[in-house]
Image (cartoon, rainbow, N blue to C red; front, side):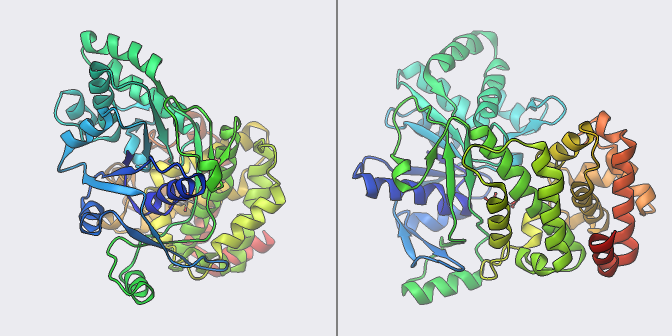
Length: 461
Ligand code: CS2
């Protein structure tokens, strides 16, 4: 089962799974994909028998590939009972998920499931579940009563300790059920379900109409579910599977006991500089990440953030060379054929900056250093929030952010107002004068001196 059948899942998990099956000859696997909020991909894949093309873009691109590992695509919104039944089915051995940060419905104040969230409440109250965690728990609950046996839940989202976190959320949901249901279910979960941690990596932009036309010319067929992706792909997985798995290592996945270190490195180096470039790019009207990184000053800011703010605050996994990794990441951002938009990477900032950037800010401040570049990224995000027309801000906390913003918007008013959002900044960070000073400094430069001011400050400040 795969929950969250977006472009990333098709270009990553489905490709790894098919490649593993072909390389190992173990053909007994197939993916039932579930779309979460929108049924578009399920509707696109159904008449194509689940087949779709992956078009790699950029240097080293492989020829167009038609992927056949998805055997069924269902709309979770329209068929929630089917999702529960499939998770409960004896034939299902693994549930993978790519539902994005916001799909986990975490309460940022507690770090666990937000049981006050209306959708989570709806699922807890017993309707056919619509949230990912609700779907998993209801499926597992049914599984526990039919004796369908062991199963593995694999989060493939950009969250630190994504497996441990998913296990925690699943248990929190189970514990919030009436006691007579909760107790046996929690005991069953302990004995029957594993939640390995993973780190996933591949840049996959949203497919455009132009991409579909290009694929049609190459393939000679119209493929409504085609995806484009960079050539690079990586998957690091903790080998903790309760009921078997495809031999993903034969497709290049790395099984490791040190996934946490891989995930931290990827989130704070790659995703953090992706966000930095997205918000600087949005401020300077650059439509794509490759346009943003082509601006020398922005390239410098990303590079210096990685080297000066991030690397001193993390421990790299064995086998990862810092210099090589950072250079490779910047090279991947520069891929001009990918068309990864700054708007897409800049979306859902409230869900991303804490994990990607504030972790580095905190680590640097604790060590007595100024997180100059990570603060630039946060300031650029703040300015994006303050200058984007209310209806256009693509963020699940848009309402809360809008309510926090002052009527008159300048560095001196926006920074303290947004720092007051406890869903994003904890009290310690919000009251740190060094951090506030850096944010105000950068915000003012972006706001009043524009691109030239930024160039000047980044290069000579
Ligand atoms: C990006 C990621 O949209 C975003 O927030 O930073 O989706 C990024 O492209 C992937 O994590 C790369 O593996």
